[in-house]
Image (cartoon, rainbow, N blue to C red):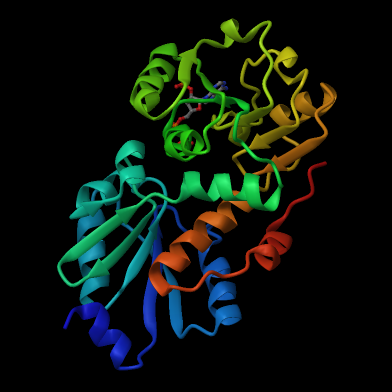
Length: 284
Ligand code: ATR
């Protein structure tokens, strides 16, 4: 019998947590607490402030206490990927993990950020990505996580623009086997239009605007900011001024990636609407 089965069959409270540093800002305990209550799951979800450079030891200790799964946030997504014994394809493509599941000696790593984003866009916002021209700004961790889930939606084209062009080209190369994707510099966007534009840069965290020309929004139906809780960021303001009708931030992505982890751990899909309503910061 595996450790996971032992805990479950005893009818004990199942233990999960989010690990990061810092960790106080995490909304995951609130989200998973709401999911657990709504679905009647007997589980406890706590926070772990992992010591910098001490990720493996903190996870070992959590597992020794019977912990069944973890969410992973900055700066440990690469450590989690390295710690795992099995990695999903999307975790491999992202090169990072945001969720882990423990089953005896097995450590499974997943990355639900991108699928959560796609589910928010297609399911909650009602915007299909199939056959669309998608612009993705940024080529860091957040963009990387979205790469495979975007291409799985079969867009007409995915264009990745980044300040450091080499990172955009590298990401495009990684995705090339999965769909029509190319990398470029921001300057090359002049004269091009897109159906959907995603800001996956970290610029909004400092109230900065990535150097995207407003003309990309000419035929754009949805502008999506992956950061959440920042209100109308410079990126969203630019899109709004350019006439984009639908604006969204990453609150739905946050809720949906959590829901994906919850299904993976518990086998039950929670409704995300209540969580999204609770965490939404108006885009003004
Ligand atoms: P994350 O995990 O949030 O993606 P990251 O991996 O550090 O963070 O990546 C940050 C991304 O935001 C990068 O694509 C970065 O561009 P560079 O690779 O050229 O540095 C992008 N970025 C950050 N600030 C930016 C700004 N002011 N304008 C444009 N891009 C910015």
